[in-house]
Length: 185
Length: 137
Image (tube, rainbow over the protein chains, first blue to last red):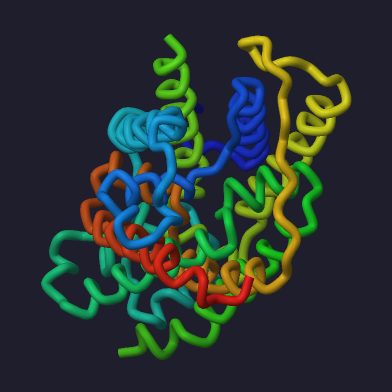
């Protein structure tokens, strides 16, 4: 059971529990503010006051990140004998049309996330641009999936609802309009 | 002691997101194609339980484990920053197939090209900090 993929009705409530634990520790559940903290540690305060934050007060969140890295290691190497993600057949065939032959057989597409894929400069650009959008977008919107979609909506915040609508506008544009342009061979 | 608690919570989060496949690029693509209930089930059930827990914490005025009053800050009122920032984030989320939490988790899982995504995300956060005053909020 532990070694199979965990069903949504187990995982979702556990995520809510993690949020509640952090709130009960006097903190909050938000992963993207760490990006800001890393910039501050790297000396970004020299370029913008936005990064002149007290790094010490965000130390707890960096420890959560450290834990998340360890959790990823455990999940992948100790708890998952079979990395294949059982996505729907419809999704598999759509992805095959886009050239993702690894669909249905891997955890991440080997076309983007294997060392061999990095031989293609296009993959570097895709990954870098994707990351840039994530980092820029989440700081602009003041939160990501954890901060807005889970924490903000749990606290019935209208701004978080607007942000989540934005997440879906962006995601739908990317997958439906831009993927065929980016990946069509 | 407290430090260890944060590391353990993070580890638990990492395992849950990895094992739920919410950290899989494929699941994010499938979600935006509306081909499966899986991701909606995760977010929906997290929210259902989350709303109850947060409302309980607020109404019961329960103290934190260390005895302090708990304050959950409201999000700043605005539309522009949430819709614009949110849309940019969504574009990146769908392309990278990972939001910030899963980016760290996938580093731990050993998918090294995700480090390029992480570097991009740091560059993006930095660019926002520098351009902030010129953007509509």
